[in-house]
Image: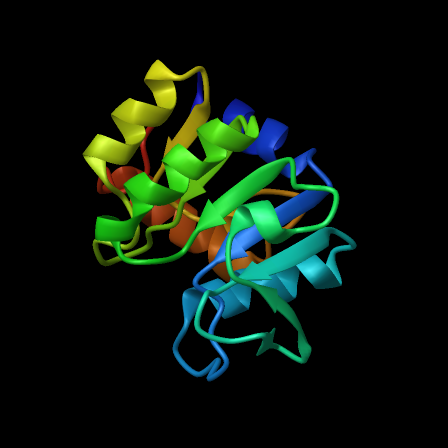
Amino acid sequence: MRTKVAASQFLASKRIAVTGVSRTPQGHGSNVVYRRLKERGYDVFAINPNTDKAEGDRCYPNLGAVPGGVDAVVIGTRPETAEATVRECADLGIRQVWMHRSVDAGSVSATATAYGRSHGMTVIDGGCPLMYDPAADPGHKVMRCVLACTGRIPRNV
């Protein structure tokens, strides 16, 4: 499936969890994603086991703690923790996963990607949900073009 199609399907979800949202938002990509999705009208849930508040909202220790569950997850933590998150998604029946990555290694884990796909999930392994409509802004759209040209965003998932 083309990444653009997968992104559209992901962003059609209305209940999205974002892992790695920090209580100190400076320099944390997860916080930017969380805020933008919230501004765009999504029911968004911050996941961080080390705090109960982030961005002025309740923060949940894990995906299973979110009342009513979620439809999709943005992984914004280190790659080493991505596999555990994808396994939790599989256990909870969450089928849409996005491992955030911009110019650095981000959250992408080949092991987590393979596990998710082998369990029927759509796993977007790179880029950012803010690079695609309806969550996009002009700066992220430019970044999408640059990262796509350099292979930092997969063409297919």
